[in-house]
Length: 345
Image (tube, rainbow, N blue to C red; front, side):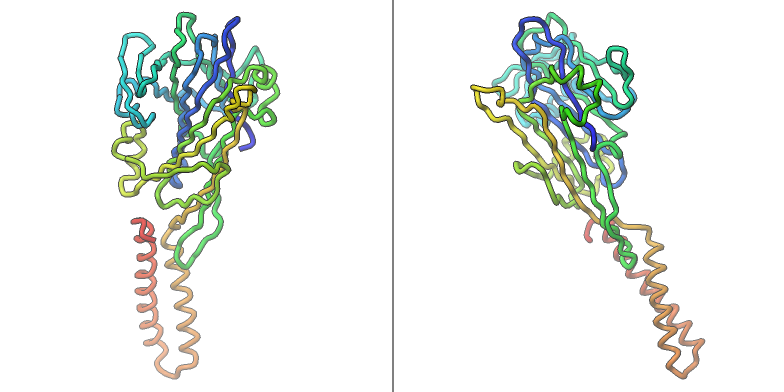
């Protein structure tokens, strides 16, 4: 990814600067290209924010955005999963819903957003801007916002490359890679840098969760702090309905953590920018007829050469060899195809 997300804010006068804890969930949906990414922002000192801006470095439409904050409010069990803690929520008729995560008080902020493709009368050549307005009546309790970008990630963040193909087995070796950049000055358009570079929001911590099919092998990460587990798929289906498509496969969840250096004497206690890069590989079954064709040709050529040196009825040998080779080809190809479909190969 040669571009960067960005988060900045328009501040209120004489207020303590805000900061956020950033939660990112990336759902890599096998080879189907229907990847989705969720962003959650726990905003500290929200009273100092007039507007919060989130820049997406590719063009999307409103249909590609799904607000998730209300989903968490309406489904406390999902909130427990997202925060990996016991969350007690008080549902109100307003856009603010008080909650307690363990012993910490927060508020779910369900107010919507404005989407635009320009900033101060400058049209974006590429990218989309989400604008969250923070009401002046807000208190100082941390506010949580969560949303999803869907159906547009295959070419923007997640890339898939076919590295090798075995025509004998009908299997392709696939490489999946993704890179997430945030507040990277050199990878942002000039018109964004001019507005945002002096007011990038301070990031205390980044928690990235990457969900993949269990058959994918994690081969590289730019982050050393990694944990993994099998996802509780049944519990997460309400949150991500795409999990219905993986009923026969387990999902692995990888947890990557980036923390700031907590030096109270300097501003280094915050993350100013970051890049997260990871690679996975997996085997994908190709169309079975390719394997049928290759195996049949090898068998036919081998039988023809062998029959050339044998002085018996060529017609009978060719028919017998054809039937035998075809049968073996179907059995071998079916073994690989069914094995891959069931995740055994």
